[in-house]
Image 1: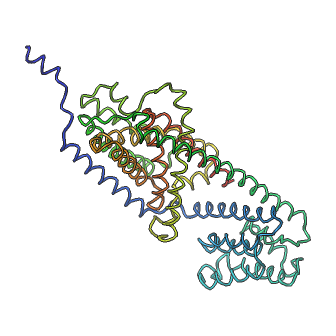
Image 2 (image 1 turned 45 degrees about the horizontal axis):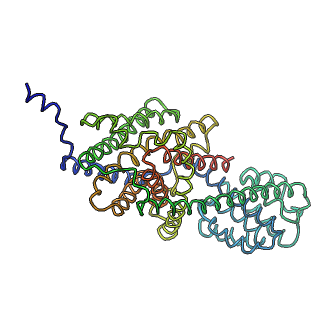
Length: 475
């Protein structure tokens, strides 16, 4: 009996190297599968994607037109030189760009862009296509504008209706050049563009201030951590660290499995509301029972994963904004690397470019759909992803590398965890550097505070801001 009592009180042997190795085989395999799948999947409905790209092009064109108006046309040549990156995409997108060229450069430049487009993509201008009927109208307009004839003598009312219907805002821009007799229409167009430019400049200035504040915060937190002025709030325990590798591998499997079931349900019962994805996401957290089943007390699991209030839930939550700020410089570095990859390896990512699949659904969705996506992106995703990546995975990585010395251990953990976080996201391989930058900032907050609350709040701020900006542009 005494022997039985001793055996019952002996803590379970948690450190099993073969289980940790097996967990990493599963992790690498599943992450590789997800990454490969992301590279080969098209970015959703082509029509929706075309609408999104058109609205983004309109926003950027309004920005350039507004800047030109605010500066009274003094820097039109320089502004036009900056627009060349917009001359891409479908033939319809490039035709709209030709209209912008006619506004910022000259009518002759618009004609040149249209001629180049028809030569490079003749199939898009087949006699049966809509573009084939639009181009002659534009050519009549810009030939007249070259002759200083602003009265649309060679364009009928039906032609004008065609331009507005097929090109929208760009059709209206083509019909109301700087010297148009219709001053009211021109003024309305310019005032809208100036408003877009002013608001964007204000947002850019605010973002610049946030970036500078983030640099200071990043330097302070980095100094405190690396100089050990503030001890790390994440302690490595090799004896139970392997359990969290097992937990993360189980979560990846559960996450993919639940995703497959969700897609099967949609095929069987039709489209499901976005809130369903939130439920599926939260359901994947059932894997947190695994450490408990392996013999780790729940209180210890919560402490290990950062599921606690730190110095107080409210105060730790308020630290989410400084956490977001210190992540911005790292995000900036990632964006620069992403732009480099886009420039030199444009075909390396999935078809449609580095964008999230929900972009099209948000653009085409009702306000109820958008609110559901806002809840999913700003609340549910931060809770689940921070728990699994900055909680479970980071705890394991720090335990695995704890004997390497603090600086090396933190450096490896702050690279490997964010890399896996970025790779499984659906934006594609080209977006990995930008996502890694954000995730590295959240990792530093986890190391600094221990609790996941600041990282969760910062994650929510980032996703919420991105989604609200997208909605604003789409409308």
